[in-house]
Every structure is written in structure tokens, then in C-alpha cells.
Image (cartoon, rainbow, N blue to C red; front, side, top):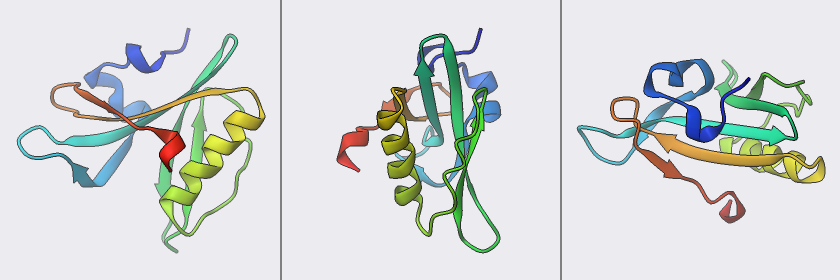
Length: 113
């Protein structure tokens, strides 16, 4: 069984999360990892965000089939594409910034993007 957003522990954040270059929050416990979780029926997975050498943003789908969304010039454009894909295809999506040290979580309002 795959993990839902609430099941992710600080020890397995690196496997499914995106390390943030610009930390959110202040020291000593910034929100330094972003987690995107998708779920539809019994299918659950995560999405990791990558930046290529050519400064393009791409999604890596973990645990589910990759819908091949393509490359985007900005990160928010990629997150909006993931949000729109999930809505069109009946997937529930959650996104949060997490502190790798404490596990504290700051949920993201994807509708605001």
C-alpha cells in the first residue's frame, strides 16, 4: 500500500519529495521539502518536481503512470498543469511544504495558484 500525505514520515521524505532551494519559513526548522500526493480510488502516488540543466521544470510521477505533461519554463506553471491534469482525470491532489527535521507540514492551497 502506498503512503498518503498524512502517512509520510521525515525519514522517507527524500524518496517522494522535492528538495527546496529556497526554504520556506525561518531557521532552525524551515519547510525544506515539497510533497505532492495524488490519489484516485486504490491508486496512490507522488509527484516530484525537477529542474533541468536548461532551466525547464518537469514532473516525475512515483507509483502511478506518468501522464507526460511536458516541460514548463516556470515551476508554478508545472504545478498548475499537475493540478489541472488531476482535476480533469478525477485524481485528488494535495501539496504541502514539510520540514525534514521536524515533519511539521504547511499545506498549500492549490486553487490559489
